[in-house]
Image: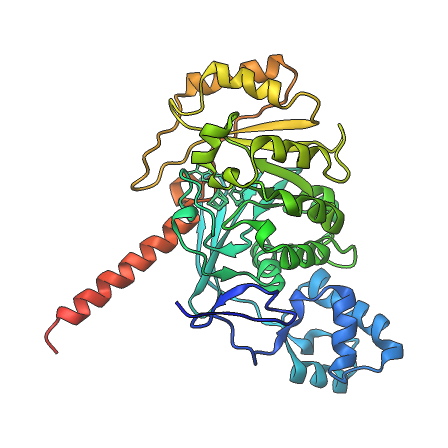
Length: 398
Ligand code: SAH
Ligand code: SF4
């Protein structure tokens, strides 16, 4: 595969697959610019003079991120010539929603085509967080190969840009019809970076997206209601905390290195002791701002009561919450989900030790929207359907 190291505000130094990359000449989507970046871009494009940039940027930012407009013509208090200049220099379009599914339990899943051939999924889950959470993706595919994760079986296609991450939130807000709605009446209160990909391998875009989503002039979801989940990229933890002030979630899944080396191969690079040390130093961590430890329940692999006790020992002194995730099976996986009684016994040990350890109820199973990896399943199905169609086409007499 031909790859190239691109630079520039949208490329973020990621290694991109050129065949599928957004064309370098594509106009900048304003949705991916922080308020500060927007002011600079307006001046650079000659749309407004420097002296007026901050004020104009605030005005335009509110149209885009508070009101959710998708057309410069809707910015009624912006002069006609300025609107025309904006339309000449930038775009504001939403990506195409390839598929939208709603589960019996209210979970909504969106398959979004952010660029030709680049599709990601975002899942809205009601009654999670304060009123509802949106699970967003940070990459298409993943470079890591956690053995229980379906996304891990997909090669990284590319990093998402800040605009493409923000677009997932915009699509959900369009669908929930909640632009320009006061905080109290909202259905979307929390954002979790628990979709496809490793957010800490795309920190520039993730940090910009968080700045945009949390900006009080726009979508205004507090940084304390934004959680970034990582498999443990220890050297980036400090930067994540400093740049985003987001809540931290760690995909732990094992209490000893021998097992974690297998489940989360990144552990061979940053072992459990190194990881825990990095977490203790996470900026802003306190009993009021605990780290969430995610622990996927794999039958006869990591679900013994001894492991529950080891988990309690391991997390001693770390302000922690533990989230037990029943394993979601996928075609070809070697793992099974622990029995419900085992999960409950495991949770009871954690609870007795004083940890809040909710078992994450699988949501949206009827539309294949449960935890993380099912997103890639939908892509995989699509890919296999494409291959089947291509094969059928090749065999059919012309
Ligand atoms: N790459 C990041 C964030 C995305 S994964 C990370 O690994 O943290 C979001 C969560 O779903 C992680 O805790 C991941 O371990 C978990 N997960 C992955 N595959 C799963 C599966 N098959 N069943 C249940 N949880 C899974
Ligand atoms: Fe990547 Fe997270 Fe899946 Fe591991 S669990 S393969 S880091 S998406």
